Image (cartoon, rainbow, N blue to C red; front, top):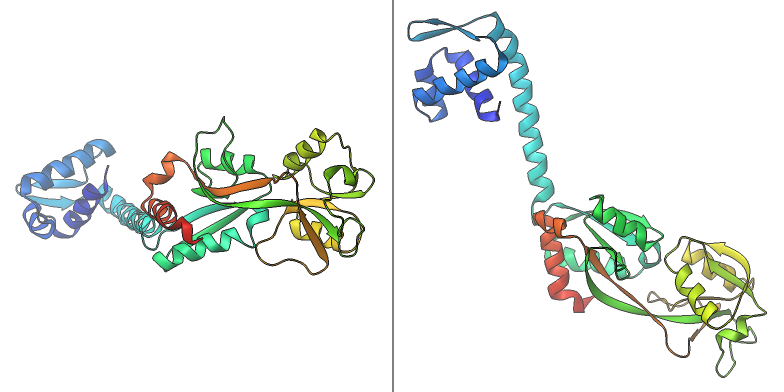
Length: 293
């Protein structure tokens, strides 16, 4: 049962004539007759009485006509919604992002695409960990993600857009804030403000500390980077985080790690994402003009 058969049946209900319906639908009479035959065979009942060349709708046809009209309306509405959502210029893009890029890279990516397709729409989905975003890509929950590079086990495409410098972060006036070359080992006796377990940056920081033989005294854990900054600014501890791109807090001192450590950020997507015109246009735009971000 398809939409065309239903439309032809509704027309036949009104005309009771394969000739008149053929004219109305821009088809020939044999096509209309075959369409009606398919529909009746699938439904298991005749919808019309045959009276020579004329048709006379029967009680089954009267009953089915109401359902056919509703089905046509629903199918047409569904077709319209799909067309709107997938339109290259105005369709919906489900964009995931790490919480830590919500103030800088994410707005820059969206601004870039709005400059190309002003009517494009975004559904934004935040995550604390990259593994969640890559799982959502594979499960078709999101179309793309602003995220760190994919783990080896993930079959995702990825384009680097920026890199962030990782820094030791101290409250203003802290004894290490003005040290010549503060090192990770200097943090051993300091209360440490850490990213919460499960966040994307926690294993990165833990690995650096472990490699330096440091087991920090963790005073607080938080998944929100702004909360982490606030706790350090209040003098409650020190931490390690990316140098912000949206402006530094006047109550914090950022000292780059030595040797330099950077965190790569970019746009990830799956092959299936390219099957949606709006998403394909978004990925193409970021790929061609990513240097503007």
